[in-house]
Length: 139
Ligand SMILES: [Zn+2]
Image: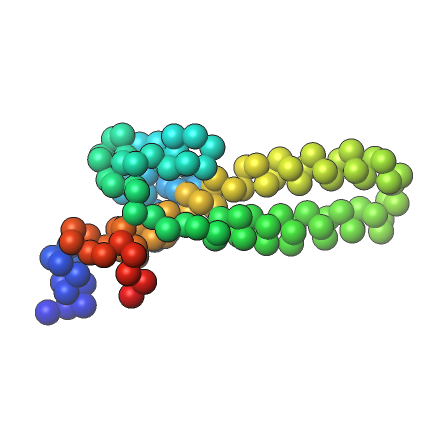
């Protein structure tokens, strides 16, 4: 018996890359057609297309943490580089970087949550472990 067969008979392989890509695009990790979110970052209870139960995900604080890491590691060095090279007035820097950071955060937060939900589905984590699995179990 392979390791996959020991997970309650659900032996299909799930591509984590495809699931995360679908999640980044705000789509169901299983079918890629149904909308993942019913509002900004609130997931649907189930996929409107394939019926996958989405309520068992545990994205928790990972999406905002990932968003902060990405925005901080991309936007701050860019702002510092622009300051070093062009030395624009402070008001111009605020006028450019604050909206840019807000826009990047606004776009990245649901995308990173979708990626987390996709990753959890692909790895059968939490509520995606299968029927009868304990959604609160971390094993
Ligand atoms: Zn679906």
